Length: 95
Image 1 (cartoon, rainbow, N blue to C red):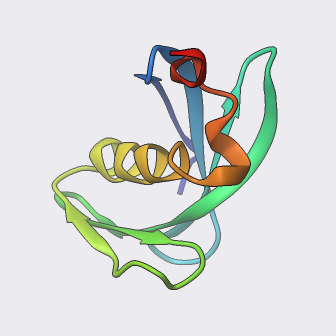
Image 2 (tube, one colour):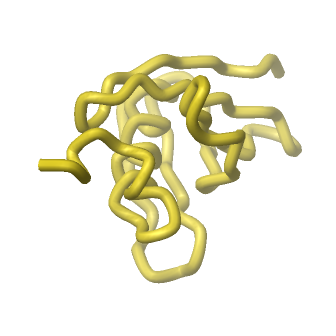
């Protein structure tokens, strides 16, 4: 299994998301804002081929299904940018 790396624009801010293998068909997902926020773990990704699940940290949300690893990582990143400890790094905060 290889690392999976993606780049998204969320709330007007570029974020990098990386999923690192942590067992069979399981990845630890982290997010970073270049020049703004250090890498932060945001959840887990499980699955293979076209059946993936985004597992959110904290147990406050059920896992969400996605058709690709990229889509599942984007779900995790969108959720993370709403969390109080991360939200202030996004450009929408000034509006």
